[in-house]
Length: 202
Image (cartoon, rainbow, N blue to C red; front, side, top):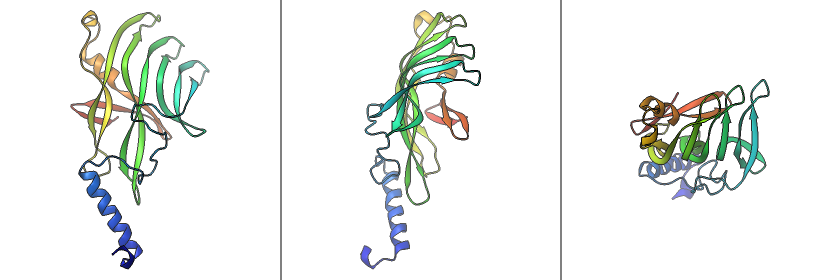
């Protein structure tokens, strides 16, 4: 059947079948653009990473941790343990990041996009660098609306409870703020914000 079809018809059929597969919850596969870019990330970690130190325009260290590597090419995806500092170089938080993926509709095929999210115990410090409180981020499935019909379900770190020893310090507003995750893009930094089982861009 495909041999008798013209090239534009083949492309339309391939797109139609891909849309059907995605609509019924098919996992990302090797036909997707960027598939395997960071290797097997089913455990939330890339096959290759590199330790970096991030600095601001005043050469003050703002972060120390690992990023995912695409071969020898570095990315902006944070993975593993990170220590993050304010503009004065004082430690403000530390904990682990994991890598996740979601699908968008590209010109001729589906594309995989990657992001990082918090996972496990994160420690937060006051303006003097002393421990203020800890929160546990549990990877949970949330929905993201993309330019593909129906969107995509992704994993994202959510705080399921406030530890009793920090109930006088940590508020719901604090949790909402800490669940936001900054992503670096060529156009600038944006935030992924989880709310009511969905993730939004801010």
